[in-house]
Length: 311
Image (cartoon, rainbow, N blue to C red; front, top):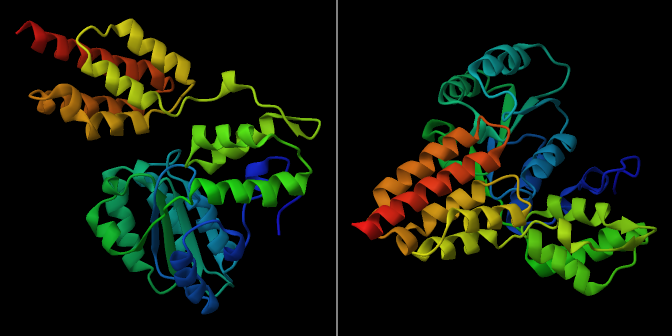
């Protein structure tokens, strides 16, 4: 069952039941048992962007007899949010048998806010459950993790996504398409199903999928950056061109690739480079234009590598 009143595909085709959720069968079975009892554990969902964490959290709320509060922690990340909104909701009287607080993108919460949330979870454990979602579980403090049933949301395979898009979205909307175009979109944005859906909708004209490859974000640009950093002849202009051609506006994955492959391009200087990556990842959380931030990081890395060559 889908919500036809929504014009955005990401909302219209957001799953309303576990049966329509494209994800791990074992996770779905575990959650379904709790839903059948109309009582859930505190939960923490983590995994890559667009893999269905928020969808799963909202799905659980919609299938429970409960009052709910849903907050985006990337917008409301401070301790005031926990004190003013979460605590007020948890302490208020309710006609429902339980209350559920969903904190989306909880990895954006400050350390102080997370510490405060830990106490709130304990204090209101009889009446209120908490569902947290995040991309990076390492940003969630251990005391919070230990208070939640943790689920790693593993994206479905490309084949599963392709079948889901064809049978449950394109066919339902009566959209004709070339298989190669659908394959291109999936390959570009996998595992981000949200970006995939948005691209399909924006590329559909008169019920026909007409793909404009110039607007696609290049999903492999991270590998190109790593390869360029390996070369002693690489210039800042080359790095900037790859970033510009990628059409990306969020670079968390690139920072992670820079860290994971650090020995390949910066052997002997790993310590310095890690400090740069951490510094600019932190800055990136507070700026609007994240491209400037990532380019400043790449420039610093490049200069450090060239200094090593001179020495």
